[in-house]
Image (spheres, rainbow, N blue to C red):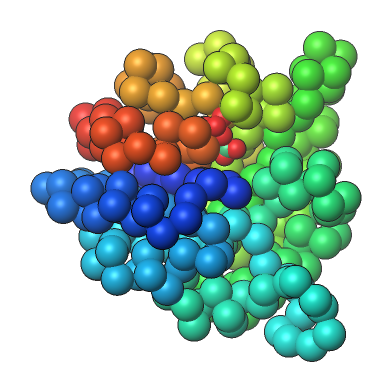
Length: 246
Ligand code: PGA
C-alpha cells in the first residue's frame, strides 16, 4: 500500500516571515498522508525547527558532486545536514532555466540517493509536445534518461508535471492524467520490476483546493506536487485534507 504524499514546492519564494505558514501547517491535526515542504535552501535549517516532526523537508535541487569548486551550488549532503529528507530533481524550471539534461537529472538523483535523500523526480511534456501527440514518448524518454539506478519506493517519488499546467491555472483532463500515470507505472515496472509498485506517482501543475479532490480520485495518483497553493497554510491544508479523504 503506497502512503499518499502532499508535497509543496515553494520555489524562489519565502524569507523567514514565511516560516509562520509552516508553523501553522505543523500545528494542524496529524494528517493521514505524508506531508513534505521544499522551501528555499536558505530557510531549510529554520524550517526544520518550525516543521517539527509532522512535516518532512526537501531541497529543490542539488549538485551531482558531493563537494568541490561549484560556486553557488548545494550538495545533497548539505541539504541533509540542513534538515532535508527529500530533494526535487528535474523540475521543468531547472531544465529550462539551467539547461538541465536527463543525464544531469539522473546524476543529481543518484547523488541524492547516495546521501540518503528521497528523490522527487519531475517529468512532463510542454504544450507543443502535448499538441503534437508525443506526450507519452517524451515522458518515456525523460524517465529512461533520468531514472536513478536502484530506485525503490523508499528512495524515489515520480511527479508528472505537464509544463503547460505549471503556474497557469490550466490542468489536463482527468483522463489525460490517468493515461500518463498508468503509462509511468508500466514504464517504471519495465525498468525496475516489482519495486515499481511501491513508487509514489504525484501529479503537479495548478493543483489547488478546488480541483484537488477530483485529481486525487484518479487511479495511480498518490498525491500532488504543489507550487503556488503550497505557500499559504490554508490552501495547502485544504489540499492535505482532500488527499486524506481520497
Ligand atoms: P503550481 O506549480 O502548483 O504553481 O502550478 C507546480 C510545480 O511546479 O511543482
